[in-house]
Image 1 (cartoon, one colour):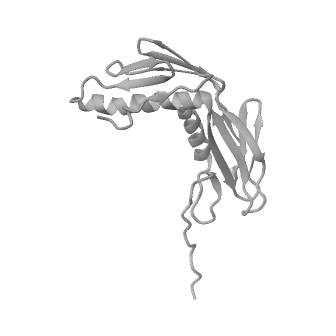
Image 2 (cartoon, one colour):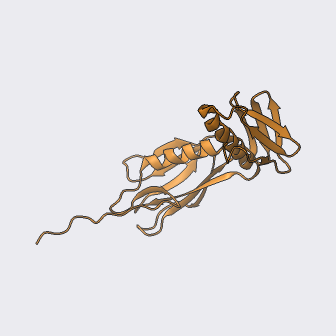
Amino acid sequence: MSRIGKKSIPVPSGVKVEQKGCHFKITGPKGTLEMDAHPDIDVTVENDAILVSNPDQESRQRKALHGTVRALLNNMVVGVSKGFEKPMQIFGTGYNLKEQGGKLVLNVGYCHPVELKVPKSVKVEIKTPATRGNDVPALFTLSGPDKYELGQFAAEVRKVRPPEPYQGKGIRYADEHVVRKVGKALGA
């Protein structure tokens, strides 16, 4: 039995859970999320908790789905009540960013600015818009209720200019550690 799957999901006050068969609609102060649970997994909504159960303990696929469905529903409840954040940094002399007309505009060393369309559920909060030298990074935070969409957009932003190992220039997650390499040694 899945250790994660058998835990009940507490529903905080202010969050409304609607179930129609396998379809779930969860509404809270941060927004509304919808999901279709797998039909092989039993999900019930009681009072202020969501219970996920696996009717067939022998099937390997159902064992895997049990914990997955519970984790997805839990992420939805946490997302609409508290939300998720992804702090990010940009290192590199002259690199900067701005939000303009629903797009994130990045100037990160290319001959042209890179524009990325920001999804509707994701909000961009820019703390420091430009880098100062190689030591002070540009700081910004991506936030939103949908953990998947937030993580996907953060990965697309990072992919524009991933951090390089010699000087550390590029876009990275705030908690990411970049392993630095030693450059070429001068020949004698």
